[in-house]
Amino acid sequence: MDPALLEILACPDVHHTPLALDVPAAELVCPTCSRAFPVRDGIPVLLLDEARLRS
Image 1 (spheres, helix red, strand yellow):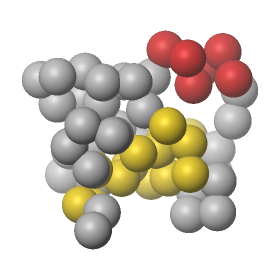
Image 2: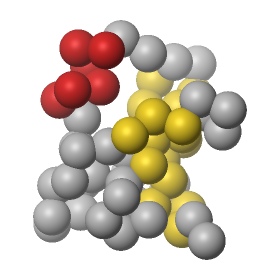
Image 3: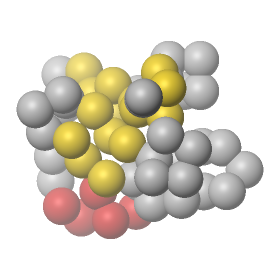
């Protein structure tokens, strides 16, 4: 994923925390709410309905 894009991506929830990339899982992770957003074909899917909660 492009590092410049990763710098501007934030969780779509109300807190808008910057996301971290989890390369092995192909996900963007929010450290505040523990949601993981999938990255499909190099495109981040930042929909709350598509996110999963990490344990």
